Each structure stands twice: as C-alpha cells, then as structure tokens.
Picture 1 (spheres, rainbow, N blue to C red):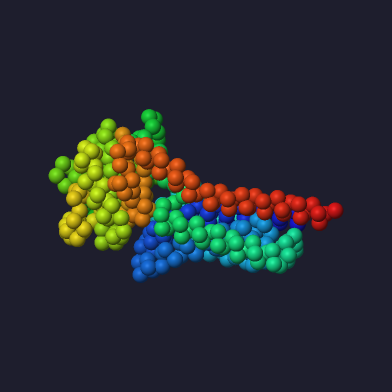
Picture 2 (picture 1 turned 45 degrees about the vertical axis):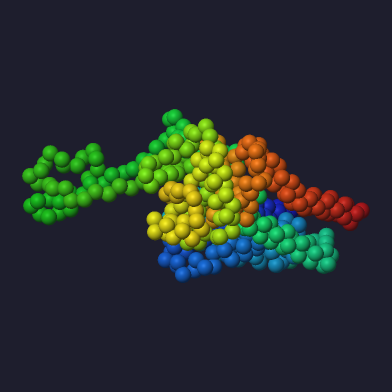
Length: 415
C-alpha cells in the first residue's frame, strides 16, 4: 500500500504543478475567470480580489504540487491537497448542475474541460488526496530539514517571479487561439461535416374549452386543430453541443463602414490593432507609442484601428484626453480580453495571421522599427523575447540538476 500511496502522491503532485503553472503564466486570465464566477453567483462585490486570488491560487497549487512530487514538507502538502479538493469538488458539482460558467478554468487555456469532466476529475483527485492524507506520516523524505526549507522557499520565489513577469508583460506561454503564429480566419472555420448544436423544442398549447396547458413537440403539436387548441408559448433546450470553433464571436464593427472583419483578415497589407477592452480601465503607459505607431502606419499605408467594447462617449473622452489619431471599432469584450492580456496592447496581423503582440509596457518604438519590414521586425522581437526567457530555461536546468542530485543522494542512501 505504501507503493500505491507514493504513486498517488506523485500523480497529485504533477496535476497540481501543471494546474498551478498554466494559471501562473496567465494571471490576468485567471483573474477574469474569478470575476466570471463572482458575477455568476451574484458576488460582484468580490471582484476587487480577483487578481490577488489568481496569484494566490496558482502559487499555492504549484507549491503543494512541488512538495508532494519531491516528498518535501509532505504532511503540510497533504493537508493542502485535501483542503483544495474538499472545497473544489463540491463547488464543481454545483457548476456542473447549474452551469453558470461553461469553462471552469482549472487548467487555464491549456486544457479546456467541461464542468462535468472537471467534477469527475476532481472526484478522482479527492480519492487520491485522501489516500495520501492518511499515509502522510509514513512518507520519509531524503532531504534534511534545511534542504526542504530551501527547496520550498526557492519554489515559492520561482513561481512568484513568473507570475509577476507575466502580469507586467504577456504570458510566456500563450495557449489561446490568438497566439503569435495563429491564423484567425482558420481559427474561426468550422470543418465540413462537423456536428451542430442539437435542440429540443417544446411547444405549449392551451385548450380553448378547459384552459388546460399541454406540452407538445414538433412531431405532434396540434397545428390543424385550431378549434380546440391555441398556441401559448415555446421553449428551446440544448441537448447536445456541436463543434465550436476555437475563435467565435470575433467581429469588428467600424462606426461608419459596418462589419470589416473579413476585410482586415484578408488584407495583404499589415494591420495594426490597438486593443483595449475597457478604455476607462486602460493604462496610460504605452499610449504615446501607440499614437506614434498610428502615424507610422498611415505613412506606410497600413491599417491602424483601435478595438474596444467601450461606449461611444467613453471613446470620445479617451480620444480627447490622449489626442488619439486613429478610429475605434467595436468588438466583443470577452474576445478582446482573450486576444491580449493587456489594456491597452498592440497586435499586428498579416493576412489574418498574428505576427506580433505587445503589452502596454512593451509597445515598440517607431525609431526601433525604422525602415525595416514589419514582419522582419516582429520576428526579431520574438527572437529577443525568447532570449529574455533564457532565465526560465536556466531555472528548469536547475531543477534538472536538482533531480540528478536527488537520484545520486537516494543511491548513496541505499548502499
């Protein structure tokens, strides 16, 4: 049984590490999900805490997972895993039954599960967590007390630094359908023969003589018996979901020309989009660079638009405040939050393909682009970004060395 308990400990550890990490690299996305939950349950007054809870949840999940996986501070980690699963298992059952939010967000955007899939996953993890909890006093770590404290503190610092970096800039791993290199048109396409949503229609008719209300379906409703029955109401219920494209509800509405989505996605020229889901919450950082880029785009003959879900009055005030030289188009707020985790942010398209994305702190300077081709500049920026992420590769190398040390120490102890 001890072997089984250790296997369960490692499995739970891996799941918690994965769950915490994919949320940690996208703290704003997790904050948006907390806001969705609060609004769905009538707890909008809790929205102020969404970002804090996003940081805290991913950090705790990662630390619990690392401790369980490495058999470090295992008693504490077993308590943490059990408390997590004891809270989230009944919560996900409520979500599965009521379905106020279609995606629980337990694995961020890396792995989308339905609410029922999430519930049964949590049931399994709860069982594993119970086994680990009851055997928590029998696990023996090969690390001494000082090594365990060092590993725990180092892991906390590592995860927190990643969270802060991804919050201040953009996620170092982008699992969304608007990631650099993704083609938006392809993401909107529905494959031929893909299943469609299936609905059940209920038609309620009222008996003219007795006043009785009776339900029918489309196959037996009394459409010919108008003397005895009159239509009262109808109800439509989704019984089976069909294929849903990764990108849906993405529409760009120009204030004068109407829908220009396809026009921009098929454009042979570069299209620059300043994305701000809510102008009232937009940061002033990067706005001057966006204005200069708009002038640069006009000089080069490129399209430059702002995308927002804000009201026209808010657009007018914002434009006057920052002397904005470009037009704003209307786009769904959820799509804008999905496109880029920054407010504002910049996205560059070429024939519908995302070739560049920058958060408000990293908006490129016109002087830096110079006379370079915009595609070449974007590719160079991506290479430099990959270079900045070398620090994370070094941390993972450190972890690999740690595992090597662990194996060597275990071998020495077994001699």
